[in-house]
Length: 365
Figure 1 (cartoon, helix red, strand yellow):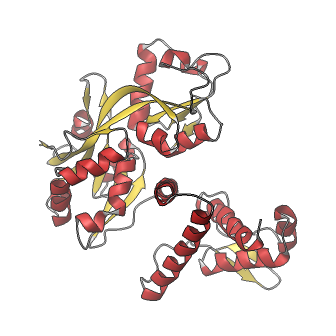
Figure 2: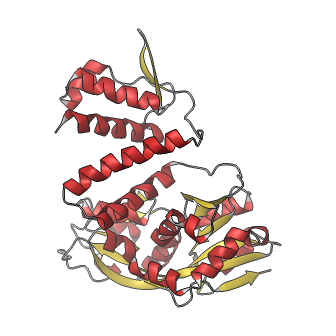
Figure 3: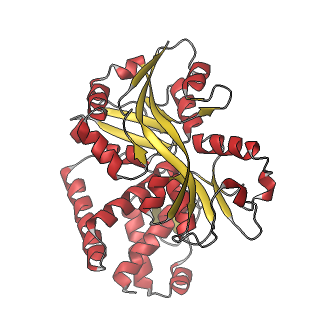
């Protein structure tokens, strides 16, 4: 591999270790000699990577003391034209590299959205309220990620900041004032309904809007061609099969746990049932990379990775908004857009969505 690309891989690997917590503030990075040996590269390549990480304010180097993770990670930086220009330049270099390798622009856009989804889990809590920025916490959804990327077109002068924490985590964030809106698809087994019982339980006494994003198809994700010939949940305990799951607190896991009980399946009989991922994209990626024979998640994620999908249920995904947030002009733009033909076409094209109820509004008093 060319050294000019290898240093970028070193930067990416260390950055992920820092943001995921594997490397803690103050930890010392490996010496240049050790990194040179590990990556089979020249000392100059490692030095270039460490310099880039220093420019990103993730590490600091001191003569005679080595290179350490900074004590406090950067949260916000000045939005200068020069900084934006540097970012565009780097994006163009990346595009040139992958387009030259034969990838299409659609494949690149999908890959970037999936990668951003992972960072939105790692990033943690949303920032404090900022004018013009709506803070979202809740269940992972690929259509919502697409909307966030195009939000300035839907609601000019506004942006949508996404943090994926699961449906339950999103409602709790609303209750604690840490988010402006949440995304939820929590199914209540007792009432056979979505979201309403949980909104009443976690946001009592508040007037809350439930704005439907879409109906989503959930099911089993398998490798292309479904080599293990999996057709239903009762196949999962089969000897030799490896499963990958969503995390507790996610709406997907709530439904699956209940379905497993209805079928009389002991979760301990499913190898990998406690191997959990924070997003549908991560479930699909685990299957695509051969780490699992099946996962449970959205058809949209299966489509994005070119995998097979066995549909099991259609669920409603709602945006949950306190009345104060619903009165924000940006939400008015979003509600109108969700009811439009343009929105339904954009969401449908992602695969795995049914949009006849998109934009439907229900109030909880």
